[in-house]
Length: 112
Image (cartoon, rainbow, N blue to C red):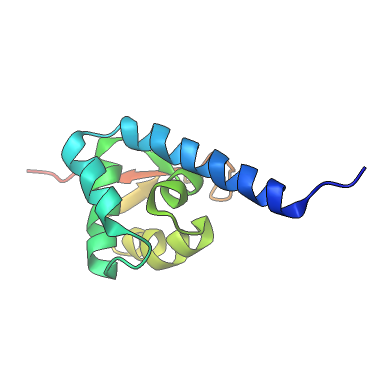
């Protein structure tokens, strides 16, 4: 019995949309609205600012950020997370195991 590839793609798209809605529902209203307003072609500076605000809320994994931002997790890592790490604005939750599948990122607490 063969499966229809289009129905598999549709099921995956629906699953991703549901995951994204669940993640958005856990955000404060204003931040959820900003994430929703970005779309797929948001200006890089605006996306970076949203990433920082998300990481202020709690640690996030690349997969979660990718779902929220509707971008490939590897793209999120290269375009936003890596530059923020290099600028010491964020840090890994498990720096001793950089490639850990559960690796998450959070904002470096600013000292007064």
